[in-house]
Figure 1: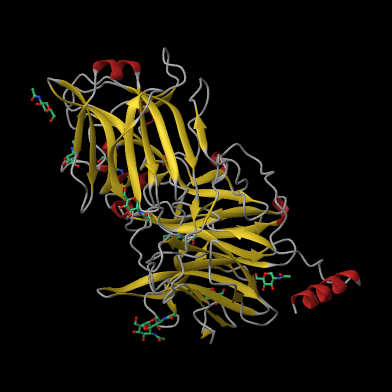
Figure 2: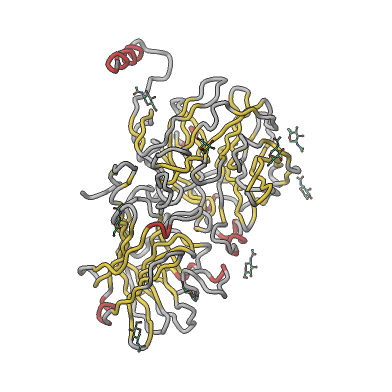
Length: 570
Ligand SMILES: *[C@@H]1O[C@H](CO)[C@@H](O)[C@H](O)[C@H]1NC(C)=O
Ligand SMILES: *[C@@H]1O[C@H](CO)[C@@H](O)[C@H](O)[C@H]1NC(C)=O
Ligand SMILES: *[C@@H]1O[C@H](CO)[C@@H](O)[C@H](O)[C@H]1NC(C)=O
Ligand SMILES: *[C@@H]1O[C@H](CO)[C@@H](O)[C@H](O)[C@H]1NC(C)=O
Ligand SMILES: *[C@@H]1O[C@H](CO)[C@@H](O)[C@H](O)[C@H]1NC(C)=O
Ligand SMILES: *[C@@H]1O[C@H](CO)[C@@H](O)[C@H](O)[C@H]1NC(C)=O
Ligand SMILES: *[C@@H]1O[C@H](CO)[C@@H](O)[C@H](O)[C@H]1NC(C)=O
Ligand SMILES: *[C@@H]1O[C@H](CO)[C@@H](O)[C@H](O)[C@H]1NC(C)=O
Ligand SMILES: *[C@@H]1O[C@H](CO)[C@@H](O)[C@H](O)[C@H]1NC(C)=O
């Protein structure tokens, strides 16, 4: 049978079928945007050299809303951030809640501009745009809009009307929503009073709407069931953008609910077409298995093939897996820009004149003076000045105090992250080191700390329910002066280790933590460095970070199977 079908496919190709040449299937490796990259929204833009662009949620991480570009749907380069400077929305810097900030963006291309609309929970909802997604400074400031809800969509109808559908909270316990809609007038951002649009399929809460016009139908793609195990993709359609909508009898059209798939929580989809006319979908997913206990990378972006025949409902090619088949465009890493490819390792020396890599993140707006590459007298280092508050913060902490933290996403199931640190704290409370950071409420830190008169110690301390007890080990003055290597490793799929030693010398494990510590909420883990004086205003000693290395050592995709990380040395 297999041979026969290959023969038929080959003979159709041979007679020069008028359809676009049938592309061969190749292997889709999921996630396409590994690590903390939830709520993907993607467009394919022919005018920009046949490139796919995707945006994802960032909550309190800054810069916010990364824009990733790809020509083959497998290699995605970070080309910039839609939210990259405080002037765009100053109120972001004052958000208190660790689960607030930039929720699900909608990315669209219209009238030669790229547009984002998004809710910054705790601050404002608004839209903004750029004529050039490769230039951070070309993004406008946020135009605030009166949208009484979250997950706003942006849709230009055939008559030019701009609509935004969004999720409006009806009640909080249990949490229920309805999809509502406003018209937006541009450029003022004024909106009409919102109206009810659709309830979806009554699997509460409907969210994440995206409207699409195809073959005279207005389609409304939704996320239902909430972002955990019951997450699902549903769709409805109607003749008008204002509804009413009938539900696809095949709903949910994609979900991992009630399955044993390793890729769970599949939902919050977006759909787009490639240059050859193939349809594709993205969604968020957590690599957790149905147990849904260990998922330190949070909600990641996955890809799956789709079919959408004229006048028909779209058919999404699930279940989502770590290896799938589909007619991918040919491999192509020729993407403009200098940002990192999301799956690539880090080897940073912080050499003089080099920028802070664009995929490094802060938590809220950074105090930029606290992070200086190769300051005078200290070439090839990143100098950190301590924040008053530590990564947790105390009762007196206000968001604009800032924390001194800079990290990169955990993008591989297994990885080794290490830095060298030159740091001799001299004032009680001073501390600097490496952290596995989810939010200010969930992190694990290994730092050099001045504990008392006797001197400096290595301290492992974690924050979060069931956090392991702290570990304190003395370090010699000589080690501080000559520098130390600090390391975090995901040594298996469920545990991280924290190790230290003299710079370049042998390192020793100080502590381990289960990844469940950082499997929580809407965000995903970072690994990075921090500095604080733990509230002692006298503590101003800088720490100097060098030789920043992050190397993936395998992507786990379930059933005992891994595929290699990019650049992995075997
Ligand atoms: C943020 O908080 C700071 C300090 O409390 C205050 O000065 C500033 O006005 C606030 N900014 C906004 C945009 O709310
Ligand atoms: C929204 O725009 C549509 C299409 O132009 C129009 O029919 C409708 O009346 C508008 N809604 C409101 C509330 O103005
Ligand atoms: C937008 O709304 C404001 C406040 O209601 C009003 O003053 C302004 O004229 C409106 N702008 C447009 C272009 O409708
Ligand atoms: C939508 O759901 C709400 C409950 O959230 C319900 O009160 C309302 O009647 C529903 N509307 C329609 C048109 O089904
Ligand atoms: C999953 O199982 C629950 C409980 O049996 C059921 O209510 C729900 O409809 C199922 N959903 C899907 C998408 O399989
Ligand atoms: C290509 O993969 C799709 C699933 O995405 C499958 O339905 C189809 O049969 C495959 N085609 C070939 C020629 O293998
Ligand atoms: C430092 O962290 C500890 C524990 O996480 C916390 O109790 C304390 O308040 C924090 N101190 C400051 C100054 O942020
Ligand atoms: C300093 O702290 C360490 C670690 O907690 C402890 O072992 C040591 O006794 C302390 N020294 C003084 C002088 O308090
Ligand atoms: C990872 O290692 C820890 C011990 O450090 C062990 O308890 C755990 O079961 C291991 N996880 C797996 C999936 O093997």
